[in-house]
Image 1 (cartoon, one colour):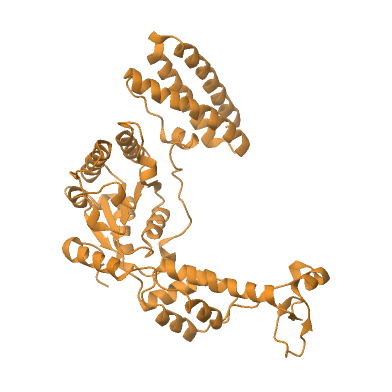
Image 2 (cartoon, rainbow, N blue to C red):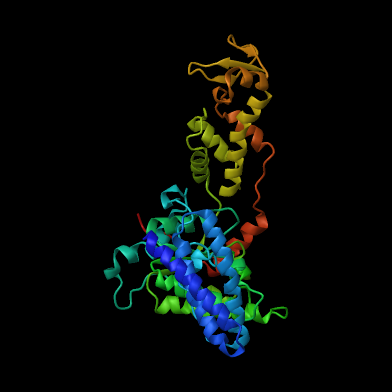
Amino acid sequence: MEASNIQRRQRAIEKLKKAKEQDKEQDKKEKAYKLYMEALEDAGVYLSYEKDPDIKKKYCQKFVNHYKRATWIRESQYVKESYLSHKAQVGLGLVQSSLKLSDVKLSDVCGLNDCKELLKEAAIVPIKFPHFFTENRKPWRAILLYGPPGTGKTHVAHAIATDSRSTFFSVSASTIVSKWMGEGEKQVSNLFRSARDEAPSIIFIDEIDSLCGPRGNDNEHEASRRIKTEFLVQMQAVSTDVKNVLVLAATNTPNHLDEAMRRRFEKRIYVPLPTSKEREQIFKWHIGKTPHNLSRKDFEDLASKTHGFSGSDISICVKDALYQPIRATLDATFFRENSGGMWVPCERTHKNAKTFTLEKLEAKVGASKIQPPPTTKADFDKVLEKQKSTVSKASIERCERFKEQFGNGGEGRKK
C-alpha cells in the first residue's frame, strides 16, 4: 500500500508538470485544466493516506495552490467542470473529513428520548432492515432539530452518526459560501453527490437559518438566492430518489427559515431545555469519574437549583466547579499526607497539618505527589452563586410558538 501510494504521488507530480507546460499556451487551457484535475485527484488520494503531518502539510499547500489555478481556468475559459472524489477533497483539505467527529453515542446523550427514537428510525432502522421499506414505505430523509441554544442539537447529530456508522458531513456557511459567482451552489451539489457516493451518510447543516433564510428580501444577494435554490433541489432529490442519505439540520431560530425549506424537512423536532431529572443526569455525566463526594441528594439539589439551564450551561458549571479544588490547592498553606502517600491541602486544625506553600512542598516532594481534594457540593454552590442561565425567555417562547405552528416530530413510540 505504501509503495503504490508513493507511485500515486509521483504520478501527481508528473501530471502537474505537464499541466503547467500546457497552461503556458493560450489555446491549451482546457487540456491544462484536465491535467491539473488528474494531478489533484492522485495527490488528494495520496494525502488521505499519508501519516507524516510535515510531509502532508508540504504537499497539501503545493497542490491546493494549483487547485485555485485550475478553478480560475474553469471559470475564465468556461471549461466543463471535472469533479474530485470525496477522498481526494478530504486529502487536500477542501472539505471536512467524513470521519465521525466524536465517539459520543446516543446512550451518552441525557434525555431527549423521543428525539433519539425518531433519529434511530431515520438513520439506523433503514440500514439494519432495508427489507422493511418496500413499495411506498420510505424512511425519513430530512429532519430539523430546533430549540434554544445549548440543548444538545449538534451533540445528538454526532451521536446518531456514530451509532449508525454513517459517513458524517458537517456543513456550515463558511464551507458553502464563496466570493466566486456560482461556486456556492456547486459546493452544495458536490456535497450531496459525495453523500450519495459514500452512503450510508448523514449531512448535518448547523445553523441552517444562516444559509436558508427567506427568499425574496430586498437585500438578498443573487448568490445567496442561488445557493438556497440548489439546497431545495438537492433536498427534494434526497427525499424522493436517494437511499441511505439523511439530512439533519439544527437551528435556534426556526422561524427564520424559508417556507419551502421548512417544507423539505419531513420531521421538525423540538429540542427543549432539560427537565429536572435530565439535569441531574447531565451533572453526573459531565463529572464522570473525577473524584468527588456528592451524594444522590446533592445531585437532586443541583438539578433543582439550575431550572432554566441548558445542557451547555450545566457543562460550564461543572467545568468551573471541578476547577475549585485546584484553586484551593494553589492557595493552600497547610497540607497533609494521606494514606496513599499523596499530599493534599487541609485545614490548619487537622492533626497532621504541616505548614507549606505550594512551591516549597513541590520542591520537597515533587509535583506528582501533590493532589487536589475531591470536588464538594460547596464548590458547586459557590459557582452557582455567580452563574446564570444563558437562555432567554424570548428564545424559548419563539421556539414554543414554532412548535405550535409547524412542529410535527418527537412524540415517540408507545412503551
